[in-house]
Image 1 (cartoon, rainbow, N blue to C red):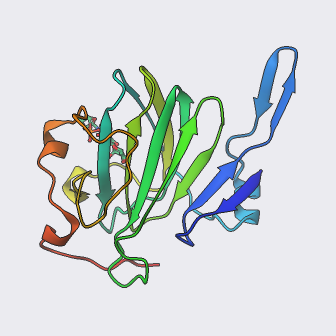
Image 2: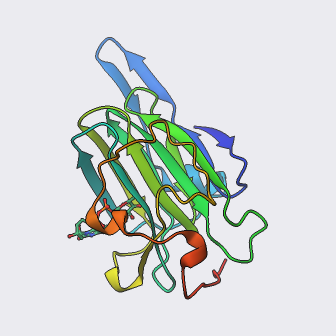
Amino acid sequence: MRVIQTKLPDVVLLEPRRFGDHRGFFAEIYNARAFRDVGIRSEFVQDNHSLSEKVGTVRGLHFQKPPAAQAKLVRCGRGAIFDVAVDIRLDSPTYGKWVGYELSADNGLQLFIPAGFAHGFMTLKPGSEIVYKCSDYYAPETEGSVRWDDPDLGIGWPKAENPVLSEKDAEAPSLSQIKSPFCWEK
Ligand SMILES: Cc1cn([C@H]2C[C@H](O)[C@@H](COP(=O)(O)OP(=O)(O)O[C@H]3O[C@@H](C)C(=O)[C@@H](O)[C@H]3O)O2)c(=O)[nH]c1=O
């Protein structure tokens, strides 16, 4: 597994090794020991899978607050997405900074996003599916969101017009409007 550091020191891009042959390929997409060896010690307790029909669907930016904050390990099983992590840890030197990468079924890249980050993505192909592991259970009472096009964040989405959004995401506040900020246990 190739480990690629991002400009946010805690967010890591991972490229699992693919063993190709005449049938296709084989890859280990999660191996607790190999992840521990590269410093990722999160214990994952839930796997999620979502399908977005249309190109330009945006889900996010989402997070859960403590005590149910989630680290996530995200990959694209079909199609392609532009996947984004935003540092929302108040005490972090990179608070409000984002990184974004194309994750696709073809490139097999995965993004590890620790707790304390908001996560979201835009689909780049019709019928894109993402699969992601979470280090805590879904706890809707702890959910928070930040608007996808928060001008303070200035996320460089590949396609900026008329995204397909959920009602909840269309009404999300900007990061600076979040009323009860929180600090993260590291
Ligand atoms: C996230 C989640 C949702 N649900 C339910 C609630 C709701 O009825 C339905 C759809 O939920 P949402 O609209 O929140 O789904 P979605 O917009 O895909 O939410 C996800 O977005 C990405 C970016 C993330 O990072 C995830 O953590 C999660 O927040 O699924 C669960 O049962 N378990 C879960 O873990």
